[in-house]
Image (cartoon, rainbow, N blue to C red; front, side, top):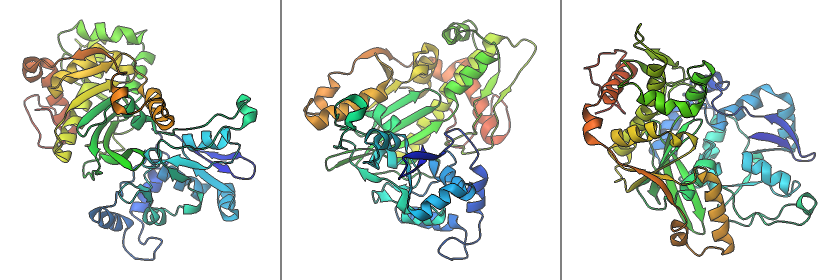
Length: 437
């Protein structure tokens, strides 16, 4: 995501991508600032609560581009000058691609991308003037928002030799949801890559959360709008790659065998929080750590603890999703590079008590965007045709006995106890959101 100069088509500033924390101080200063741009001498977070009660999503996280954009406007004089002169435009990655492909003719995005910025009102389906005022963002720099399946124009003929129509723009996780054919209310998709993103189809109604889930526009095709509720864990693949850098293993493919070579983690727990902890804990300052280390701990125990932590976070997200949305789960599908690990997949199925469908192809975001474009030009007639194109690699079936009595579940209770209550008693339990039952 970045800011560009409209006249020169040059990039003014590069926005730091997740999981950067540079904007954290800016967020704290805004939430504790006495007075907002409207002149009311009350903290903006009070207005935020008021907006939420009125049906507007007002959740602003350091992971969202909103605070990073505010930080740049505060610290970069060149960007402020361009805003004053009307030559600055802001966009997500897709906006930048559209802008470049059209040689500056198109400054647009779609509803799915707009809803991920933290500054878009998914209830009113427009940029939030209120939130822009709170964090001092000029609405003039934001792109036009169009349908997900839409004729965005064509690429400039000088790029590919001929103009090529651009018929779809879609955000990463929403595209994966569409590629997984999670078209029905209650469908759940788990993407495990650098981070984990768990999404549930909430139908034609957005979901407002008090636990850190956030409402997204899944897609808008014609008059139909489909909403998602999403929770994420930022350090899934990050933790595994970190362990590789520490020489706990040489090849990621070894981790499954290493984890299975020991009966449990020997009481070792890993907290995967290099970028803080997201829903339902929502602690941006949390630090990653191992707990329960002892002289008998081996590399295999450490690797198993890391892989287990991925499944435990999946369980936390799933539980809070069930508790908040009250939507019956119809199916669960998983994709992303980490889903190739059978140990993580099986433990997740055990803990959730649900079968999990892993597709034959793991890069579902590209497939989802292609599906939408194909529908837009009439290559496919409807979603039923798309469902027949998706194929399953393996179905992971839950083992309820292993989930309720196995060592992994006991370790999970210890981890959740430590996270939520600050204690690490294996027999303790917690009433906080996301604990293992």
